[in-house]
Length: 478
Ligand code: P53
Image (cartoon, rainbow, N blue to C red; front, side):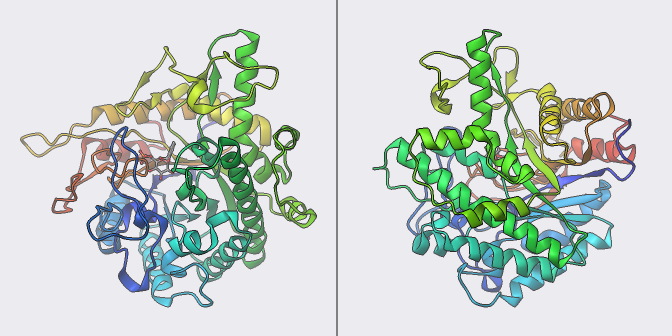
């Protein structure tokens, strides 16, 4: 079986990492607007509101807000069939709890989607991609508050209604399951708007993550129902960060630890795809004595909000080794992950494992038998401009080529049902993890550095012409 004829080749960005214009057109402050720049090993800080003397890389980002026509033209030149981006929640509901949506914000996405459609580029839209209104964080405690379910569903419904004739493919929460591994640091903030005070026990934090995750899952399921009501042709997916956790060895304890570790990342997918909590997650919450507000009505909603497809990001795999564990095999990311000696890592320590993408496609298809979409895959690297002005990013081509080949094996040999593939950051954007510009993913270079200096000029890299051929040949010329 070959890749389907209408295979969705393209790229993926997120509003807060690309658009900038953080105060234009009535936009409110989002959690991405109060995150400072970090670096490799230096976490981004979250400030108490926007402070005049801090550096917030998302405020301008690459100013996609004012450059999107030029950028989409470049994507069209590469032959993109689709572009994944997100709708900044704060352009539509500046505070999150507003009664009425902001017309200027809605208009911006009308224009943006029209521009894509002009070139036959299908918009693939994430509703919440680390962009929760800051007001909901400050005043409501983010997704620890049940009220945020309604705020999100209102936002989703307004978008579904407004763009029902322009957008067919949707996703609810970006990388919803990364919540699990942010339990021990501040990064959890942007996933669901939780602000920790640092005096919580690890168990309290974990409980908070399970609670917030539950409300998000309910919000997602309600949005799925609402979307299908508004347009039965919609395809609404979940979005999972897929980082398979391999056993260190074939020692049965390593194998079992790996099973439990993957449970912790995958129970979200299970709920999205099957409509109920897997037994292992229920048992775990019970054993840990988590107090979770989960009503019978919630469980009914989950059942009725099953997704149409599974979208996921894939960058790397992990490995884990049994050591201090008992029969519960409780997995703790920071303690239990080990370096995989069989694979290389990027400059940022992300382990490069193309076969892991084939593994991931099989993993999801074995479990859920739903169509899938790879909505992020890419290589963050420092690029150098040669004297003649070119950028020879062969390392990026190598990474993408090997992953695309593994993806094709999963389709052609293993028979998984795959709708499309979008590389992360087809144009350089602000890194979500570090806030850096120099961690570049693009086929198109953007002249801007970590300090925010540069002309913002766009320039195709070598990989631009390579990807163009890949798309043109539907993955045959690679
Ligand atoms: P950056 C962690 C692990 C895997 C994917 O990441 C992750 C993260 C969070 O940083 O995030 C996704 O920019 C996310 C994108 C992000 C991209 O991966 O840190 O959906 O917003 O930019 C790459 O290199």
